[in-house]
Structure formats: C-alpha cells, structure tokens
Length: 278
Image 1: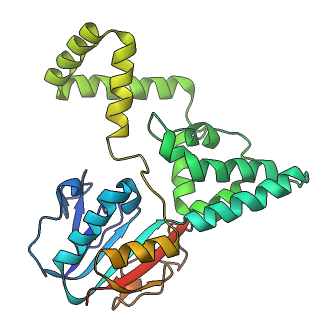
Image 2: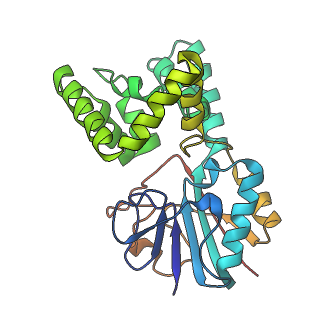
Image 3: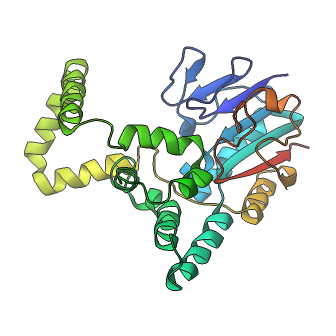
C-alpha cells in the first residue's frame, strides 16, 4: 500500500511517504503544505495527518482536504487527528465549576484548560504561556497535564523545566544566536536595516506578524460534528470517529503514529476521525 503522512514532525515511519515543512530526517521530504500536495491524482491508498488541519484557516482547510481527496485512490482512507474542541470545552466548564466550589486542584486544572482552548490562537511568541506553566516548581497538577498531553508533556517539562541554571540557559541562547548570524548573514543585515527604517514599534509589529504566519498558530478548531461536515464538503463519505489504536488502515498499530509502543495514546487531547474517498 502507498501511504502518505503529511506534516509528520518527529512521528513518521520508513514505510510511509513523509512530508514536513522542516524535516528532521532524510526520510522526510521538505514541503510547505500551503502550496498543495506534490503528488499526482490517485497516488495513495492512505493519507494521514496529525495536528495539521487546525493550522489552516477554515476556508483553507477545505482546500487542503480536497487536496487529500485528490491524491487518494477510490476507496482510499483519510485519517485525521486534531485537538478535540468538544473535549476541551467540556473539561473547561467542568473544572471551572469545581474551581468555583473550591475543589482541591480545580483552579490549576481550569487554568490549564484555558491554555489548551485559547493560547495557541493568540500567542505572539513560540510556545506562548505554556513556557511559564511548565517552569512551575513544584508542578501543581502534573498527573492531570500528562492525562491531557501524554509524552508531549514530559518533553515540554524537560525543555522548559528548572533542570538548567540561568547561566546555562543564557549560554545556550547566546550560542544559538551566534550560530544564526554565521549561517544567515544576509538575513541579519536585512533585518538590521529594516529595524532602522521602521522604528522599534513597527519592527516589533512585523516580528509578531512573521510569527503568526509561521504556521504555529491554530486558525480553527473542530469537534466530531463539524469535522465530519467538513470532510463531506471535501467529497469524502462515511466520516466516523476513531481512536488512537483503532483504524480501518491495515496494520495501523504497527506504525505507532498515534500511539506509543506500550499502547498508550501519543496525544490524548486529540480527536481521531477517518473517512473514505468513494
């Protein structure tokens, strides 16, 4: 079978064709999905993408799904994972009510759900307010956060936790800054010129605009009902909710894309859906 993994990040399998904007392996092809999918019609039996669709606007999301439809063969399966808007909204309301009642730990869980719901739509720098949240020591609601983010929570804590001293962090930032200058001297000079011409306020506005167009921002969110409707608009039939380990794709659990080798879910905050090209 020909299988395509779009926007794969670090989650890819050598038996699949893997695409990502910033490849982390020679087995991943570099491509910006905003310019379409670079394969001919009917090339694949399976198309999969995880936490990609929400980075397109609602209108662009339809066009992206139609591209997925185009490269699938008749009878081919599209599998999608996105943040689950319904789950986030229900948990936010649940923990908000518990916080009002003074339940132990509810305030922290409610704060986390607000971040899940809103932060990635409004942030103006990478990782937004999650950075400060993961710097807490002691961490007030670690088990709850892991139940929402799985292994991703552990990765964030390693990066943003208190393991490195301020001096070590400063040294690392300085090394990265000098590395950027050495590898992109033309871009550095251009930006210095722009900063001088624009002035500080307009320069900062330009930086925010650049970041918000970089692909990190969430531009829409979906529940199972709205995503099912969107899939049908794109031409797919039989949209249905699935799980991390349940799929119509043959041998799905052998690839460990939505699950870990121990069977746990890689991103527990996800909505998993599949649909078929008629």
